[in-house]
Length: 366
Image (cartoon, rainbow, N blue to C red):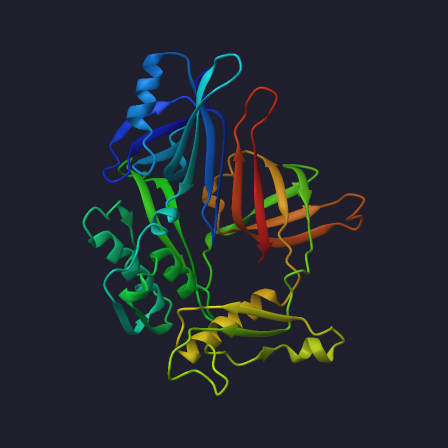
């Protein structure tokens, strides 16, 4: 029986297929808001396999694609490769890769980029396009130039600060009225090509019209529903850059206004203060927008349900950004839970000896 998952190794720039290699202990995940990761072990039984791995698995130059059936379930960049030998003389190579967002962590703005009253999604595309325009910088990230948010921004990214493209995208998105972004990996059904797509969502990434149904007992194997108040706040101030015309009488960096939820304070909650730093932000309006967005994220206790499910026709990585209706009836939810969430991440554990194939979904309140 052929393996359910195949790992394809390709040239990062051209996407030319280099090899298909066997991997043991495979695990991979993907998220909105942070890079996903892949890890596994390639067994090296003979010199021929060693030569294949050396040729195809080149850290920093090789793309790794996970194929399930005819579909692409994950895509990213190989960053580390570690050959090792165990106490029985068995040789293997551990690999670690990260989704294509990680490439933008390694790209720096060397020429000042200025945007005046430009749609924030167009600025995001402009930053990715700038990275692709430089020699050797185009890894084939597709972009949809028609998607807009209607929110116009003023931004100047100064070359002397050597900012990284990933940081600029994250900062641009993480303001009041901001957006979400990720690089989605999939197969183009029309051409069969493997695709890296800049996926933008305003105010959030949303896919699908109908929610996927998750039930316990049912297709949900296990769940955890944590509620964590350690990051809660009802008062917030952010700190920006230190520039000559914004230093206050006592000296120091630019400070945002102090934002607060008076309804919480008047409703009996203790005061919970929060702060954040944006060392490159020198415009108070922008800093205020960061502070308001940070406070909104900290308003409630962090609740990120983790749901382990059987893989069926409905559960695929294409669900990231989709709504999920979760229904639970057990001793904790004796009267039944029926709530709608959004899928913000997924971790896949392929079937191996002693382990059935399953997925862990990470949810947020819809």
